[in-house]
Amino acid sequence: MAKKRDGLEVGPVTGPDLWEERGISRRDFLKFCTAMTAALALPASFVPRIAAALESDNRPSVIWLEFQGCTGDSEAFLRAANPTVAEIVLDVLSVDYHETIMAAAGHQAEDARLQTMKARNGKYIAVVEGGIPLKDGGVYCCVGGKAAVDIVREVCGGALATIAVGTCASYGGIPAAAPNPTGAVGVKEAVPNATVINLPGCPLNTDNLVATIVYFITFGKLPVVDGKGRPLFAYGKRIHDNCERRPHFDAGQYVEQWGDEAHRKGYCLYKMGCKGPETFHNCSIQRYNERTSWPVGAGHGCAGCSEPYFWDSMTPFYRRLPNVPGFGIETTADKIGLGVAAATAAAFAAHGVVSAFRHDDESAGKKEE
Image (cartoon, rainbow, N blue to C red; front, side, top):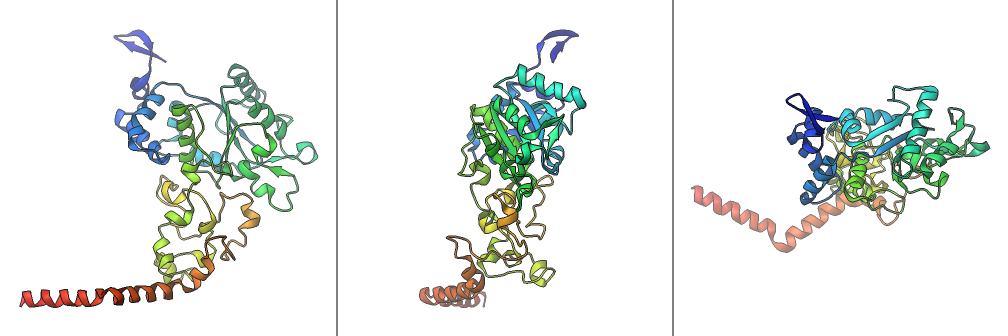
C-alpha cells in the first residue's frame, strides 16, 4: 500500500503508519505487543523487539488446511478479539488459503493454494486443522478430488513450518478415538519429516496461535516445545497449577453433586471428573470469549482435551481420575480437608500463635478502655 502526502504517493506504508492506515492506534498496537509478550511468558523488555518485528510488515504467508474436524478452530479464529480476526488477517498474517473465509471456491481456491506454494516455496507457514485419515489410501477425507493425506504431505513438505491447530490435527483427536475406523492421525504422524508444532485444544485458543506466529516473526524460529510437540509457553504447566478453584482443592472443599451448595460457591470440581491435574494448558490464564471465561470458571470440569487421545484416556468425563502418576491426588481428595485442619491446628499450638492472637486482642481491648 502506497503512502500519500499532499495527494502524491511517497512510497509504501510501513512501520507505525501501516497500522494507523488500518485504523489501529499506536496505543492499541503496543497493547497488542504487550499482550503477546505476556502470552509468550517473556519479560516486558521484549515488547519493543516484538513491536519492531511486527512493524516491519514482514507478514508470513499462511495456507490453512481443513480436514477431519468440526471447524471449531476456524470458528475460534473468526471470533478472536484483542486482536480481532480482521487485525490478524490484515496486520499479522497473510492468509492466502483458507476454505472457510476465502472468497474463491472450487478450482479457483485450489489454484490460489498452488500459486502460493509455488511463489513462496519454503517460506510459507502451513496451518492444519482436523485429523488426517490414512486407512484405505485416505479416501475418507478428500478436497478437490485429492486425499487429505496427499494434500498435507504436499503442502507441509514445502512449508517453512507447520502449525497443527486443535487436538485433531495434533494427535488425531476425536476421529482417532477407538476404534478409529478411518485410521485418523495427527499431522506429525502423517508427515514425519515436517517441522510441526502442536497447539491442541477443542478448540485451540487463538491467542496461542497468534503468539506462536509472533514469536516466529520476532526470533526467526519456533518456540521451545515439550515432548508432545507443544510450546512450553502455553502448555508448560498443568491446568491445576493455575486454576482459580485450586484454593478449594487445597482446603478439601469439593463439589459433590451438580448444583449443590459447593457448586454454587465455586468449589473444586475434581470429584466431578475435572481432569485439570493431568492436563497441560494455559486455559485458566488466557481464557476464551474475549478472555472472560473458561470451562472450569463456568462451572464445568476440564475434559483434558489438549492431551493426546483424551477421548479414550480421560473418559468417563464425569468420574474423577483413578490415579494421576506422581500426584497422590486420590488420597488428597479424600483426606486433605482433615489433614489441613489438623496440621493448621498443630502449627498454631506449636508456635503459640493462638495465644499470641489472644494476647494482642486483650492488649488492644485494654488500650481502648
